[in-house]
Length: 84
Image (cartoon, rainbow, N blue to C red; front, side, top):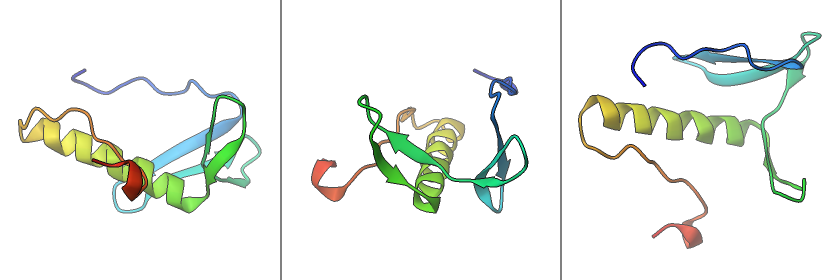
């Protein structure tokens, strides 16, 4: 998709992206929130600033690959044992 994607789909939180800071989240009431990865059984398997940083890095890598025309539009991230 070329152009600016729509935002505003969350009802209980606000996400912020700053090019020199990365991603951050806060609750509807303005309190700090954290990022988490939750499996299909609703178990938190990763959480905290490392999740936000990794999400930011994966998003940037995909976008930069698109900009330079490498054709690598999918970027993977995971524990070293799962990466091939």
